[in-house]
Image (tube, rainbow, N blue to C red):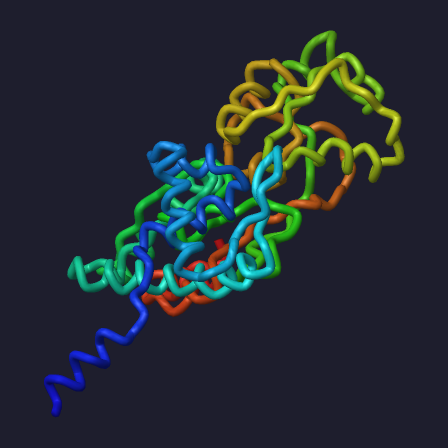
Length: 304
């Protein structure tokens, strides 16, 4: 009985579509176009389209609405995405744990360079002494939230707010300050009142684009317009640009204090709350991973 019945039962079970088709589906859903998803996965557009068709055939319904400007999920696609994404996250974690002896204690962390340099790295020796089994791979690329579960376990993000679908723990609440070269206070070009900012270039971080707008509104000068605004994706380079007199950087108090750079000064005495905070962010299921949970608990207890 057994062999025949087992063979029949196994034959009757529907076969799962390839995992590659599921990964392709998630990437297209994330990017909104086949072209962007194909670049991300290193595939040709026809090859990626075939993977999507394979999954749609298995499901029996279309997963995307096709528009001339891109793709959007159908109702079936949204339902599948909601359930499939965390399942693949779990599968990646299981494969990693089985495949490497220390994989369960290896963390893939995204962090902005300035936070890493000023606040995280000085404390990592303490973490290493407490948990020598934990290893951390550092990633500094942008768009960390969108890449969680796709090579990134967790991130320390700088943002106004975090997608409510993610787990997030706020790490700080800081002030916004204009930071400039000391020469702007020592020579004939000294800046003593905010109105003088009209002849200056403002330096803003791409993760904090509204700091200057919020600052001038808070001090009662929403009309204030600088000579220009330059955007940076690197905090350390922003501080160096300010120190060289290239412009006035609008950054957090922590950024200035932890720089310990005698070339820099804070301008004015206004006390303005920043609309941005640093957050620890991960997918809710990621907290089940030992490395993520260990780092999360240490980070919050250390009050970095």
